[in-house]
Length: 431
Ligand code: UD1
Image (cartoon, rainbow, N blue to C red):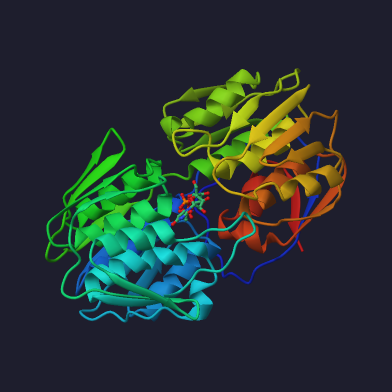
């Protein structure tokens, strides 16, 4: 069955999911637009003045709604028609972000670069803390300062301003941060002259951002060696672009299919975006085939073999898929390890999976996962978005009933996850 169009949620969020596990998933679903691509390309509208940006394939998520609210609060008029979102930007934008919107998600920091470049000033309360480890924005600020911005942090609020225009220059990122790359690419778009940023993040979401910048008239050249060259322009024009498929959502369903010994197809994937995960699945003996933009997962009589994984910036194994991979490996035959090298504290899900009978020990930044025969249903709590996804797929494979609380995190990144799972035959209910 094809899942088809999903209505935009109202975000009266149901905070609990009840799962009756042990049912192999069956059927076909389609990947949503990527949350992590949509958020920066939405912020691109802040580079416009009196022009319009139209984006297709925008997923219906809590974080997307937060970005919509943030952009509206800055004066952008927004129309949402299913997955198409139209941003009508006035001649004068507001430049102060409210505390309650900024603290809702880390990605609100993405308005910093474009607003500063367009309005010459911005004030942004520092995005709130996060349960996957400290997430500073020092690299964003350092790059903006190098482009001539004056930046002060007072009482937890970043105040940035620039006399005249930001100035294009060569910037070297100390770490290939996704958010810093995106912020600086947007800032460079309206800067005076050419900016070259070295050691940038090369996640597929960066290519999506480069395309959206090009569609409003910014010359952007991504270089194979981890750099980007941007010619600043005086005024950006209206544009129309689309959001790429969500590789992390796709991998979550792939792993749900593998864990439940199901037979599912996932449409609208970009195979090259999920190479690292497919390589590990192949190594672990999972049965699947990839044809063009569709992956098919087949049931298998054999348990997964254990594997060793280290999360890395793209094209390495994505940190956003490690909790779901840990769930799958928790019922493999043997001992697997996952080393987390991107975030400091991304193993909070382990104690919850252990409540379900998994055997995961954390030693500093490594999870040691001893495969058990079966997981059992339990009451568990999502500590963050991907931890929540891991618990849901574990619940689908477990015997008996699992209650996942704090689903508020899951709605940040998974469009209609309950409906998609039901269309694959899962017994799930929102409470
Ligand atoms: C983005 C993704 C997130 C993903 C992450 C890594 C979005 C909206 N979110 O987050 O889902 O897990 O990439 O793939 O796209 N760092 C600093 N200083 C900085 C910036 C980052 O020290 O100024 C550190 C962070 O603390 C973290 C690491 O760099 O340890 C990676 O962060 P970054 O790549 O910036 O991730 P985000 O853009 O926040």
